[in-house]
View 1 (cartoon, rainbow, N blue to C red):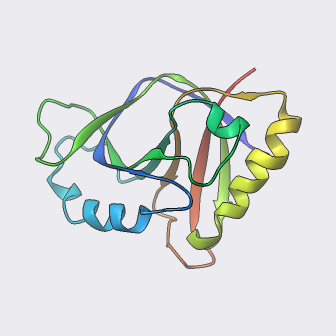
View 2: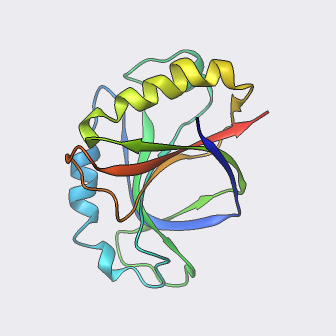
View 3: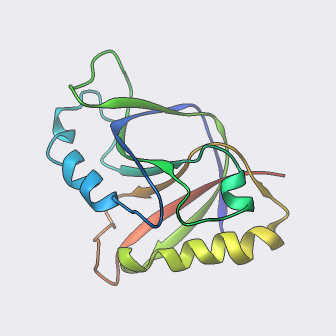
Length: 158
């Protein structure tokens, strides 16, 4: 079961790529982002954000693995006055999220998403809200290690 959090508007700076589940370029996005992120000024904390921005909620109603979305590799910042070249700003609007703790290999996180969207959402009394979805990878994130930890944040509304 998730915990629920309401966030205030949050500013992220990072890199974005258009992709789909069928044509997943997440690894190359992170490989491009990681060497450059230390240049981002005004970082807040040490967490990394993997963000999905869907064009509409139809993505979830009529799922097709070839439907594109925007994927971000980013960090939170306190100020956005100066961004390194090649970086972009993403604003997470304020709102309520269901937050799921995931422990396991990053290559198996799809199982958690299948549970969230396929089982939990239908029983939860919530609907998906049209805001960015994201995962927070903090100090417990270890990639393919079986004890790796991350949080999955799903925007919800009653």
